[in-house]
Amino acid sequence: MSEVFATTGTIAAIATAVVPQQGSVGIVRVSGSQAMALAQTLFHAPGQQVWESHRILYGYIRHPQTQQLVDEALLLLMKAPRSYTREDVVEFHCHGGIMAVQQVLQLCLENGARLAQPGEFTLRAFLNGRLDLTQAEGIADLVGAKSPQAAQSALAGLQGKLAHPIRQLRANCLDILAEIEARIDFEEDLPPLDDKVIISEIEKIAAEITRLLETKDKGELLRTGLKVAIVGRPNVGKSSLLNAWSRSDRAIVTDLPGTTRDVVESQLVVGGIPVQVLDTAGIRETTDQVEKIGVERSRRAANAADLVLLTIDASAGWTEGDREIYEQVQHRPLILVINKIDLVEESERKTLQSQIPNRSTERSRSPKSKIVTAAAQNQGIDALETAILELVKAEKVQAADLDLAINQRQAAALTQAKIYLEQVQTTITEQFPLDFWTIDLRGAIQALGEITGEEVTESVLDIIFSKFCIGK
Image 1: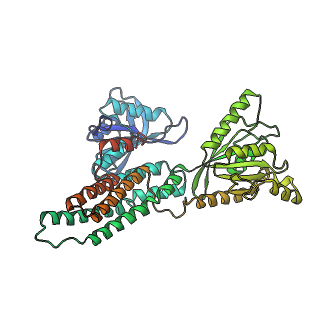
Image 2: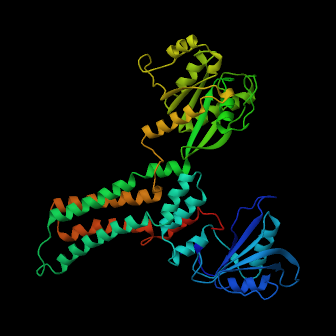
């Protein structure tokens, strides 16, 4: 392994988020051959408590030289191999906050442990055979899940629902390879291979790979979510829309145009999809230098968003300012939000609808949907969420009923395996010798093995585990 992931010695790290004055419990995790000895050095368990595996002890953490009390805590003992890393593991469950866990970690480091690298606990679990790579990545996805559906998808990976079909595909490739190599070594003793049967088997494997690849976009949607930018002229109700949607007062709302000077963010979940909503400054020409900066940030947010909600003021109608903004963002997936509809009479609504761009009157791209809202009255939010989900569905990116979903690394390996299998079929069709069949078949086997970790390089492990938090 690389120096970053040298897996020798006993390691320690804080395994819970450290937030000032928040959190009732903080955990310091220690793994390695000296974990139990270190715990006995630092932890005093009063009475007749038994030091045995999978038992929680109550007591005090003291400085081993000065005997100064550091914290009142619980100690969890897990002896190898019945632990997360399959090494001896102890966890000090301290009081939360900053000072207690930092002092306990420092004592661990002063008494023989070293600070764990990011993901090193999970790396050891992988190297010791407790997890495969798909399960390790499932743990990272579970920790970072932003919605219940994302958590369920991560749990599916953790339970091996991705590893199982990958291993089966690899086993099928190995069986085909064995058949081919047997003919190479014992050609005179065995009947010739049926080319059509081999191609048929390879096609079945490639079809299953294609099915798995189709989950990539779904997985990305669950992991990263949608970035939605609310844009429009000043004072059209963008901040009111954000507040109504998020059911909070994240954005300041006044009757004065240009109140929002910077991008305000809110995290929501819509139909199981994490949504990052950006309330932007009103876009208009201005001489105010601060507002100019806000307008430029609004334009950048719109261009970087997965979806733009162009918001207009129904009482003002479709203005030249609305048209100018529309021309700037029309290349993005777009929903037109007609806000303040409660201030408009029914007859005026029809006139407004006729002014809004559509495919029959505009050469430019028309909005995907048109939604009417009265954000200040909390009206129209359900319709807006429905429109967003319909747009997601139209783009063939659905989060519903997702059992498993591959990530970018897994998709790259599957794509490579599929390319190798296509090359095998070409080699067979063009009647190359059997030795040539095995070359690309071995490439497909290796690519599939990289997904589960049966064949993996140091660089791949470095990339995967460096993305983990230190305590995991």
